[in-house]
Length: 168
Image (cartoon, rainbow, N blue to C red):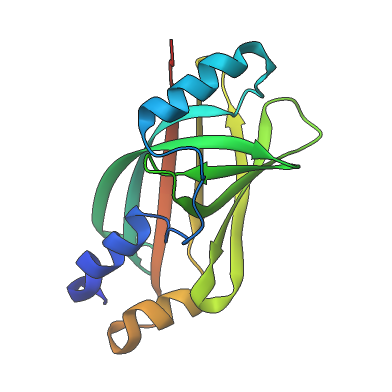
């Protein structure tokens, strides 16, 4: 099992592996709030500030042996046909949302740069302005992150819940 490497992995997962690209005009949560207030009703349902809670579950085959939780605030902004995610200092994450043919259902994608592969799943915004989804990290990624401590049957599942933060 890869239990001895959990802290380093959690740090990587916590920040969604932030990209070096920044949202030039946003340097703080208050900058994002001002933008969302100004845009008001013209925003898509997924745009705005979100509190993101992640439970990362570690399995040996189908046996859960550890679980870690973490939270952060994320801003989602539309750029072309995608909704990009940013931390509260304006740095872009490697996670995006895109619309589907179903109202308030979005395709969530996170780029695992280390293996040049996306993990994706559907996210549905409920009437209470929240959304939930889960995804399993690919074995190829786990091999790379945990190296020699990876064992056959090791799995990591991220269960993610988003709660929209009112901006007014």
